[in-house]
Image (cartoon, rainbow, N blue to C red):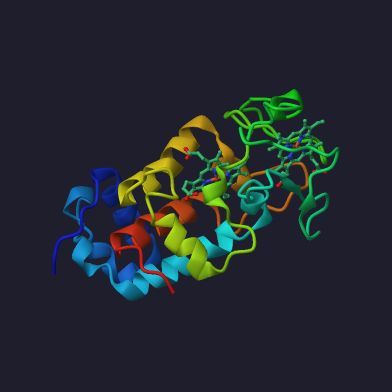
Length: 211
Ligand code: HEC
Ligand code: HEC
């Protein structure tokens, strides 16, 4: 089998993922850099994708990954269906609200934990919508999957870039990190940040298979 191009950072995450998900493989993973990525099957990739999709379709992610109308969504109480952000907020073409009311007027840039219910959430990154070509609302698992592996619609990222996006977000206490630990009585995205990172490493090492 053609060896897959996976960075050392991805291999480190992957070795750790397989060690924690399958006990019998544990003895064979060896050192991080010696991890045999040929053993990551299509099936393992699809299982990982199902978990990535559960995250990507959760309101903590989709409320920002909205379409070309530039309207963020919000979820006032856990379990509520997402609906248009109140106060007629529109992010504009800039996706940061530069044309009208800037997102940062209410959403601060701060790594402090979010504690107050129904307050505007803050993260270590400047609050803004994801670019419109990264829209996830109203899309099927297959559509999101194909879009995520398409460099024209994923911010020009290859497989490693997708894994590194999560690692960078963790360093900055960014949006993904927040979505798994949103505080303020918000429902977190499912499964946990560490598991999401590992699923992304597995899915990319498997060649990014889509259902
Ligand atoms: C006038 C203040 C204000 C402005 C301006 C504002 N927001 Fe908000 N935003 C809030 C408040 C308050 C909440 C929390 C609502 C709640 O949980 O009840 C919120 C929640 C959100 C959520 C939902 C987070 C979640 O729980 O999943 C998103 C997404 C969001 N805002 C995006 C934006 C974007 C993008 C902009 C800029 C275009 C923006 N907001 C501008 C006040 C504001
Ligand atoms: C506050 C808004 C916001 C939230 C919440 C958010 N994102 Fe994003 N997301 C962005 C922005 C902005 C970008 C573009 C940044 C870039 O490309 O560097 C982005 C880009 C991405 C990308 C890059 C590739 C692509 O095709 O979308 C991924 C993957 C991603 N987000 C995953 C997630 C996941 C998973 C969650 C929930 C756990 C999430 N995001 C929650 C704003 C958000």
